[in-house]
Image (spheres, one colour):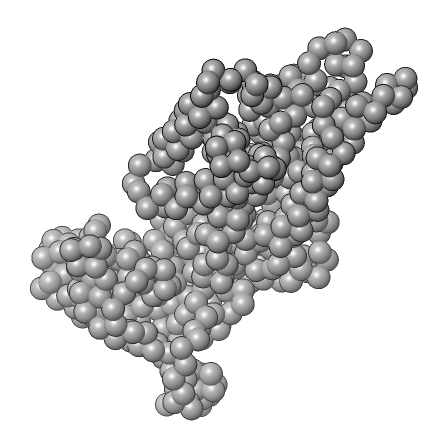
Length: 267
Length: 253
């Protein structure tokens, strides 16, 4: 247990313990609603969030990113609901514009290298303040999940039916998208734009392979997410491999193992 | 009138109501999809809407459900007191649900998410579980409560959706074409169930249908729609009407 002697390792493990359940919970609905592309796009547009902060001279980069995330997700949903293009097209348009704008703004004066750490992230650099923000995030997500999961789920099954029961699914849909956007922005610095979506999609996808009801689906998603997170950091500590990709690799293995287990176990 | 029939009529009157749709019109941009539709529905009565594709059947249902903007109004009147109320409980059975075979969701999860605020990802709520089982019993599918929704047969899913629609018991039950995914026996079965519910709970039922044979057998009132009401009345009246023949052709039945 020599790794616990290092403050950066203790912080990284704490950060994973707090953040992986967030990804696991949100991921269950992202997968059910087939929104994987949406969360990926939000991750990519994070660059634009950073750029906006730099341009307007916000002192706290997190604040500008969060505001940007909420505006971006709400605007995206709004446009998506009002056009007849498929959602994937609209998401693609928004994400490419946001990412390119971010790249252009951040490259002024040829300084983009300064920001390249956002692409792959570095969990070992996480600070205690960030861990506290993540903890607040976790509490908010759990509260949101208690109050909105049924509405999100029923709305996804059939919006008209949900509305006939007095459930305003659209509202929850907007809040849910904003939540995903905010969580991604918070995590981008230490997970990285290229990997963030895997942490949302893979635990839920692996869990779906072996779950038959909503409770098992949530439980296994959280278990896989936390276990792969901790194991990934430890493996990377002992082997020197980067921690983010290591976590994603372990989640990938989990997905294929559960997938095979499921194929052998069909009723 | 026999004594039994008399009693029935009396018991009906206690909570009987009638639903009036007055001059309902719906436009999508320039195009008028529904024009001046007026319709009366009574409890214990099955009203069936028929018409070709694109006649505005689904639009009419969605307008009644309050999900698209429309002109005209819908009145809900208690027959006994004459009170007009704007709060009408509508039970709705949609054409389909967005589910896949492997979706990790049981009938309990599905049902609870529509009728309860207790989060379905937390351990099962016993009271809620009991209530859902009771409601599923109305349509003899209580054994399905722990089954995965994607693995139900079409007929079982129809019954589950009917149970959801009548929880709580609505003033008006609205059913969208119950044809997709179930075989001919399933459709027959569905009509039988709706008929049974109608009598047992004195429900006003509005149904969009394609199956003219079953409509003739079960409907109390038929409405022929083609952007506006072409004719309405008993099945016999409508099926003999000239506009019916021109819409469906003489050999439809």
